[in-house]
Length: 305
Image 1 (cartoon, rainbow, N blue to C red):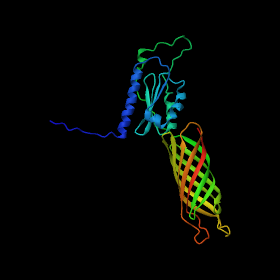
Image 2: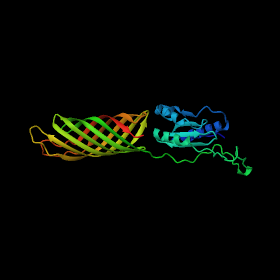
Image 3: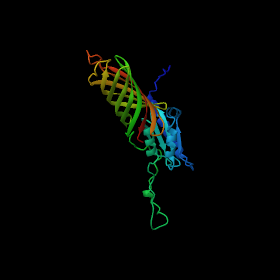
Image 4: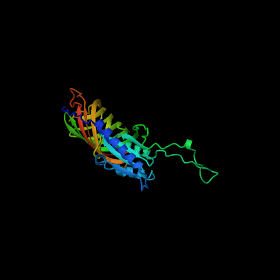
């Protein structure tokens, strides 16, 4: 009888299961052959090392003083970072992580898993031998039950110099902005205040405040923040020899993208572009309120550790 081959596509979930299973098996084999260990081992697979070039240098110091036979592996499976830790006694634990910060938190937690209690005696030089009924055989290869990734909240503040193109009628503005946001992994909640004291060719100045919400992504050594929100603009416009028009408030929808290098340390530079779209106002006036703007910002941001 002719056999009909059956083809099954490998989904990202299947790939993730295979990778994690392989890591667990490797840990069990290492635990099954105890030996003197020179120190904890740290290993990143090729995909993780390429996407997070600074991760190895961040994790290595955290293994100082850990179980010298511990083995820490960080792999990428199905687009998700997975931390696998195997200790001397064969206990293996894993945790998924959304970004580098969660990987660091996971390693801190897993390499300090509690070891067997040490029995001490204040009256004798050596502890009494346990009875056969009290001896519990070691459970090599058990997987610790741990919670999944934990949320971490950090404050981030920054400032930048800006150049904006505003229209219609179409003119340039130069100014500064300040931002403050909370990073609740991986989400962002923030406020941006933008002031443009210089505008050409019209003699004008403007100020805006925006409430933003978005998400942070990590892309090959870079951080990309994508945000959206709503803002309120106030502008003072002078049109030729006309008297100053009254200051107007004007709402706009805003989308923004910020790109920065994913490096160690609390301070990093960033480049941002945002677009604001509203609707014209001031019909019949000498100068109508602009309905849209595009802004380029270059600045520095500080984030809590």
